[in-house]
Image 1 (cartoon, one colour):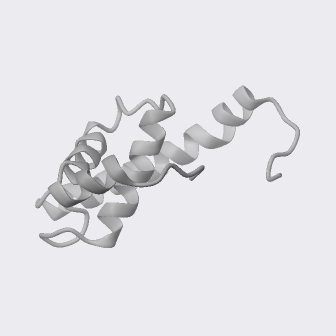
Image 2 (image 1 turned 60 degrees about the vertical axis):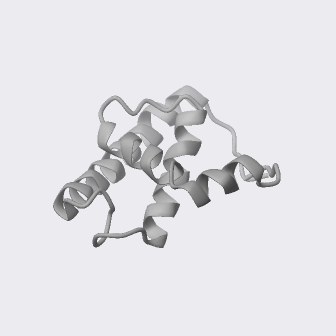
Image 3 (image 1 turned 135 degrees about the horizontal axis):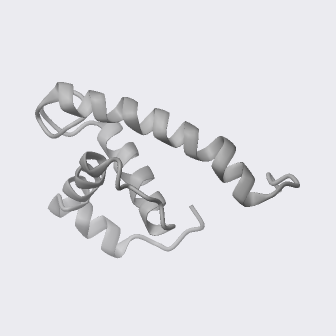
Length: 96
């Protein structure tokens, strides 16, 4: 369900990686422009939570963040917030 035929490595190389680099490059620009360590403004917002979770998922699946150390650090910063850290440690296991 949701998967079509195709060579996974070719799809990764031709579709996923270019999109990943474009999207994450865009996010790095936002993070740098903010100057606060958060993507928008000077405090935690839902976009920080969403991007941190997305980044953490990619990192857990072996994603290469060597070109985006700022976003890896952002994910680690968000996940280190005590309330979020506690939730991550105690949340139910789900497929998503």
